[in-house]
Every structure is written in structure tokens, then in C-alpha cells.
Amino acid sequence: MSFGASEFRAVFLGAPGAGKGTQALELVAEHEVLHISTGDMLRQHRKDGTDLGLEAQGFMDKGNLVPDDLIIKMVEERLLQSDANRSWILDGFPRTLPQAEALGSSLASSGSALSHVVFFGVPNDVLVSRLSGRSTCASCGAIWNAAFKPPAQEGVCDNCKGKLLQRPDDMPEAVQKRLEVYSSQTEPLLGFYRSLGILTELDANRAPDVVYDNLVKALSTR
Ligand code: AMP
Image (cartoon, helix red, strand yellow):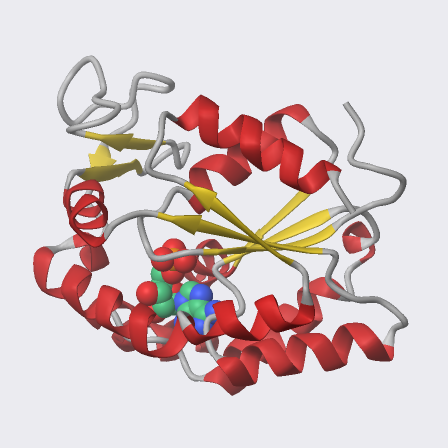
């Protein structure tokens, strides 16, 4: 399946736990699409022990946002790499208005622009149960959920038998903080992108394959 006439440059917008990452991984498995997740990039920096990773650590574990200047620089550098010269999804960026404005300017300066912003809408109570039941494989990164997609054996990844861990920021206190930060800092981006006429709103409180079909339709228009 093709996505309209040209390549897309898409942002996935939604609260933590809305399913952006899961849907992005599905899309990447089936199509030539680059998935740029700022959360994954930061977790990799932490694993590698870089200066950025060390700086980001405290903000991340408490459920706060990493400062705009650090994130904007990291994304701008990523978009300049040669493999970003095709359809891409930004997952988890932008999360603040200054980030959205910086992204717009940096794309404009290279003669480009966002083609789609897809919002994944999920009620708050569902987000809380999704996040608190979530575990991630320490080896292959697969995402499982005690309530919605349980592994066959508790604590063990079905795919690679790796150990399943709960992210520190999926602990109850940090989850609450992340949802507050989302509604105060990220939700205003809905109005920003609606006014640019590039926002598609999906009901993401549905079965993952239904959300996926609607996502592919959204990315195929325009
Ligand atoms: P995620 O995996 O997208 O939920 O991101 C995990 C954490 O990384 C967030 O709670 C933030 O601390 C940090 N992070 C990821 N993306 C951004 C961003 N665009 N701006 C600021 N902090 C971010």
C-alpha cells in the first residue's frame, strides 16, 4: 500500500500510554518508514552513559520533560542524518509549543514541512491502567501489558525470552506526573496543529488493529 503521492513527515501526538509507540512499530514492520522516538533516543543515551543521558535521567525518572533546548538539538541532528530522507514518524516530539515552533522553523529552512499530525485519543483512566500494567523487554524492547497483551509467562518476553522490566517512569507517582505534564504542556499542541489544518484525531481506545487501519487511512490522505 502506498501513502498518497509523496512521502509523509508525520508527528504522533497523544498522552503517554495512548499507543503511539506500539502503532509506530507496526507501521515500521510493514512499510519503509523511519520511526524517531525521542523517549527511545534518550533511553539509549542513558544506556550509553552520554552527557545527554546523564542530564536527562533525573527529569525522566520523575516524569518531567527534559529541557527544550536539549531535545530540540537532539531531534534536529537526527533529522539531518541521511536516512531521514524518506517518510518518517516523530513519536513523542514535539511535546511543548517551543518544540513545535522549532520543528516548524527547522523543516521550513530545508524547504520541508509536516504533512500529518495524528492524535491518539484515549480517556485518562484507561491510560493509567495501560501504563501501570506495562512492561518492556530488556533485550528486544517488545512492549507487553498485564491487562491487554500479557506475556505467556509472567516477567518473560514471548519473543526472545528476555527479562521484562517496568520502566521507572511507569511507577504510579511518575505516571500521575507524566499525565499532568501532558495536559498542561502537550495538549495545547492540538489547537496549534488544528489551526494549521494538518491534524487528524483518532479514537485510540479501540482494538489495536482497528486503530492501525484508521492510522493507515489517515496517512494515506493529503
Ligand atoms: P516517552 O517514552 O516518549 O514516554 O518518553 C519518556 C520520557 O523521556 C518523558 O517522560 C520525558 O522525560 C522524556 N522525553 C521524551 N520526549 C521528550 C520531549 N519531546 N521533550 C521533553 N522530554 C521528552
